[in-house]
Image (cartoon, rainbow, N blue to C red):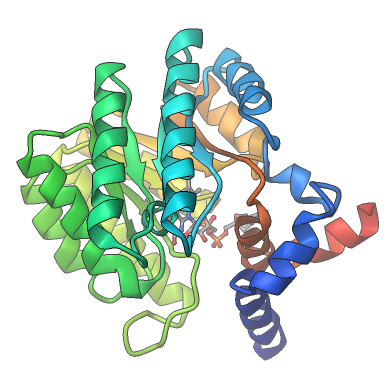
Amino acid sequence: DLGTKLFRQTLLLLAGNRAAAAAAQRYGLKLGAGRFVAGLTLSEALTEMAELNRKRIAVTADHLGEGVRESAEASAYAEAYMQLLDGIHDRGLDAGVSLKPTQMGLALDPEAAYAHIRDIVRHAGEHRLFVCIDMENSPFTDATLAIVRKLHTEGLTGVGTVLQAYLRRSMDDCRRLTQERVVLRLVKGAYQEAPSIAYPHKREVDEQFKQLIRHRLDSGVFTAIATHDAAIIDWTCAYAARKGIQRSAYEFQMLYGVASTLQERLAQEGYGVRCYVPYGQSWYPYFVRRLAERPANVWFILKNW
Ligand code: FDA
């Protein structure tokens, strides 16, 4: 309804507010963000990751950060990813990594951002680990897809990206990327976008989400279906069973701290499940987007504060 929509839009505006981020981050994870963030340090995150692996849940780890405004900041984030990759490798974890293009400086210096991402993907390749480039808001869609394509043409194929079902363009992107055999994560989409480019209604987003899933599962190119929507997960399992699609061709991905029981149940039933595990100091925008997805979370956090 209108109230929820306005509340959501306000939260998404707050997610992008630097002053609010600086104020919130002073409180560490005490604001309730600890439900969605695995820790402030790499070692805390690695411990959580091992715990998930014990439950047969794989991980994609995210060193939080986005929208950097200085090149030194981007270099520091790139270095943090090198340490993350080494940490995963040293402990033999079943994990890959996810990163954000604006965290590597895409909005600041696209060439330098590309060089950082290429270094990370190369280092991941040395450890046989996979990198997913998260999809941010629409000003970065074309540039993000171009980065992934360029890496593939350079022979760095251990990297994929994300398509958002709310964007009207996503079916076209999906067809092209599937032909190019790029591994994709499919999501509904977490940012505020104009109705001219994004479906405003949940029904339409869910419909395109299913079309994207169908296209990918039919193609056989590995696909992550990243959602907590039980109806879409059930629909996917039924579709795959009906079409005889191998479980090794897809996996479900969910966020750390969300629908944990469902994650464990699917893993026990033998489906591939991967949990997105974010950690680090810059947790504020990530946390506020999680609140916007489910305004009831705000009350949950206020109650437990
Ligand atoms: P939907 O919003 O319809 O929610 C379905 C049900 O799930 C809800 O009824 C509720 O029970 C539960 N739920 C959903 N969100 C919750 C929350 N925050 N807290 C508690 N319960 C919740 N987006 C993007 O734009 N770019 C990206 O790169 C990514 N990457 C990504 C990776 C992974 C692994 C996941 C799971 C999600 C993303 N997303 C993303 C976020 C995605 O676009 C979307 O905003 C969220 O997944 C929420 O939408 P659902 O698909 O869960 O459906």
